[in-house]
Length: 204
Image 1: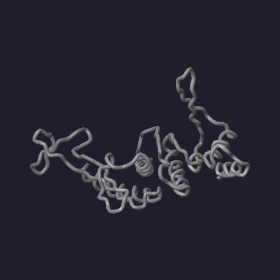
Image 2: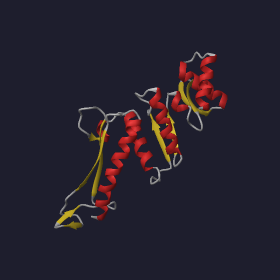
Image 3: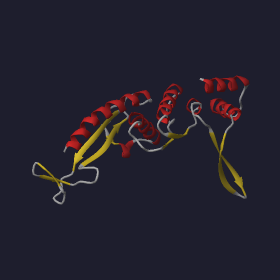
Image 4: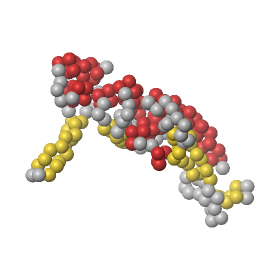
């Protein structure tokens, strides 16, 4: 039971820290909680106060994350209610808190820019940079504020060869990167002022 008690103490700290980051990441009305339960089982091999519990190599606890991102809605299991972009931001918040303890080497964030503004995008990019100090980050994004903060920029392109679609990915040079950031800012038609804005975004 010592492990369960420690988990309950740390769960409170994780809830507070994760909620704080979620608010910064553009989910200001979020509620986040960690539910820790024990499953009673007559076939279990862990007994405490005359109750027998099911157990695995990780202990007797069943841990589940609950989240609500909209006011007035009660928290529900994370896996059942969050959208793709919300899941990415929630995982980013969790990874930001757990960066020192987590041993996963590579993290992939897809659609993390869904439904966020330019200001929040810059915050998201900053959090990604923080996590990248401990992990390799791969982020798929269409926002220039996030794309400009990576150490390397790859472009994914589709083409048709022999009536079949093919997808290619290539590392952009610094000059190409400025051009791609400019396209994210204004579309295919880029002006000198847009190119200058892209350069400034990369430099900042």
